[in-house]
Length: 229
Image 1 (cartoon, one colour):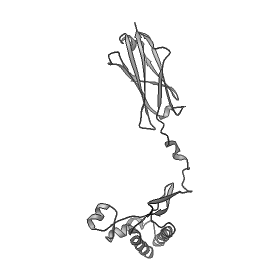
Image 2 (cartoon, one colour):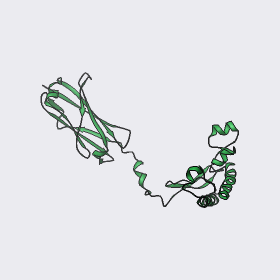
Image 3 (cartoon, one colour):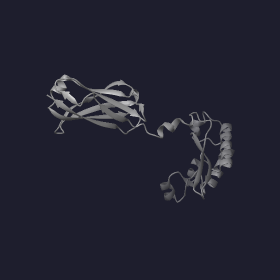
């Protein structure tokens, strides 16, 4: 590809191809392939080493020829030049039908099911509860925060933070803070005696926000309670 672009026959970017009125380079189909075939054969004959001043210290011409011969074999077997080191490779190209056939690269180091955990995002599901919906002013109050995903406890190490806000009956922010971790899937919000003593009598709303290290979508839940004299 580099040789073809240097010769002005192909261009890596569409904007450059339009400017030079040359072909936009494709490694899988179209007129680019025959042009690349010519440069591949020339590179194989010459033992061409790209960036020779640097790479020539690590690759000699004999090895360069061997690599180009392997690329030529790939081209004959697959019908394209798209070579990659990933878990899948382009097995065949069918331009008329608009179809690419991918196959798994069996020697790839990761297992085939490695990425299945991303099929369903582990969005935290949050539930706030308490023994009672009544809190007396000047008394300590605890609320339990359950965090799960697909029915399983959310691991502590996968939680970035669990914050809470308390709004009074007039929707004013009365308190805010961080929940305390207990174990996987369990956190707690604790309001001290001093905090509840400063709250007005009446209805309140506790809102809990959970940020995960695994997904960008946070989890929320709200628990209403009444402050008693």
